[in-house]
Image (cartoon, rainbow, N blue to C red; front, top):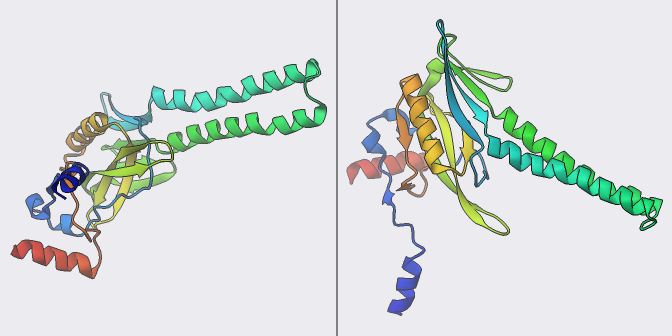
Length: 233
């Protein structure tokens, strides 16, 4: 049975257990450490970009070229499929009824591509120290409420492949969280988190390399009991 245990150990999470007391911050005990948004992508969708002028300085998260390219692939399938269907009708390969049915597929791909672009553009955001605002879409938050920046990971299981997606969240003083971006590039999201932390002068709580204890979700009685047990140990 030893060889079975050795085989299973390959799949065990060997990361160090997260100890929130290392943060030396009471807010860390009130915030959730589970993923804030479900799913994610296996490529980089947004990158931070800082803009400076004589009177102000801002930091924005913008959609990447690779994200636009991924969405454009769906948009391109629609016209290609449509041209092919028209060619088949012209040569008598399909009748009019079958042609009308075939229109559903290119329209579907084009709708998916348009939705992906809309979704990624809606996640773009801007941090402005001059106005002390965090703006994402039509939502505006006060930067004074931001206490820290949280980095966590999520294992996403797909039909054909599985991958890790990484979240960059804002931790507010009341323990609530706001998601900034969520994608699959570890190096990029860590670099952007440090850039944002420097811009806002806030700490970065990076727990990607740590195991999250069971029940560490925040805001309930089990969480409080866990904190007590960890502090006593």
